[in-house]
Length: 231
Image (cartoon, rainbow, N blue to C red; front, side, top):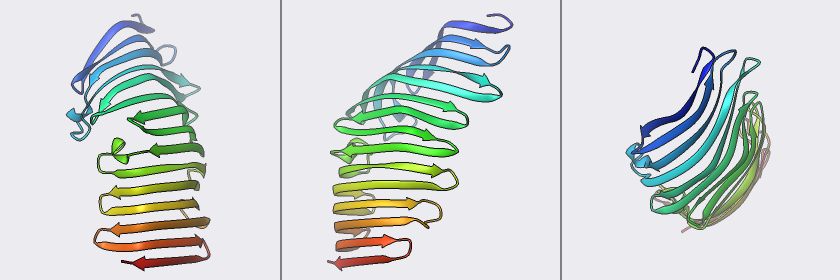
């Protein structure tokens, strides 16, 4: 290196029972910038999060710095593979931080047969599409069970975020909650709840020790009807 920066051919970090090897360049004059290629091997998240035992390998390219006084970062997860809680997993993603906002060029995560995907931007303005297709939610979260298909969009702004979503699930189970089946569509502003459109139909519901045979809800911000049949 010199007074303006340095080039590193091999930098090794031991973490989470595995290793991360990096090579790249770091400059601090005339302004801070970097670019690096990272290779992670035998990473085990359970060393910090006991429920998430696994063995992961990843290849990541990152670049960033300051431009006109603002931080920018780009990170491409070219490949993340391995096993997590006994399930084969893979992740590919392109992320960036520009103009004080998070850009998700693409995010594709798969655990066994279940998939999560997203793309868009979260900044002063929000425009994010997302999708979850889970044949067994236990593949995504250790305390969940059942089948779920959900997709939607976040939009609006940080001060007034809006969500639109469709949800369909069967034999769902979370701590304190169970549902034999649920179908729902929702459109709402998340903070003020002044714009609401909700349709929900669910069967065989259980909230802790309270059970319902069925529940139907149809509502807006000005009108709500609900019909519940208890066991």
